[in-house]
Image (cartoon, rainbow, N blue to C red; front, side, top):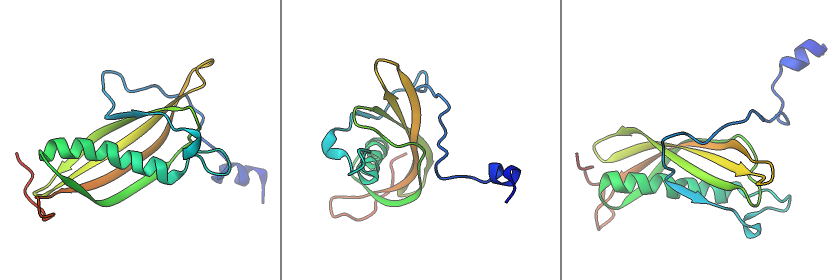
Length: 145
């Protein structure tokens, strides 16, 4: 394989290191710092732990819009862009994509503020989730307008 062709192919070990910044003028739905108990055997934070935090952040916004209980019904996309490290301060930003009759779809972007001595912000995760508004019996109900 030629060097030119090889340089055009995506590689799993190439991570986007371009600096990011926290979104200006927006409040995160959730901010949390992962701890050593949240790490895997390699010292990175478990993907499942991050997924749970994304679901919590998205669910808080969906629940507010639904004015009550919501349940996660779909995860349409989940992309891990960078590993999350112990001590990263994570900020979860939620954007509304769509409100249906009983459902609410949101995107969640996660940014990590790392290395307090040499501060750097990186986008680590993004996901699209759908929630359904539910009543006290767990049955779908209309989202108030």
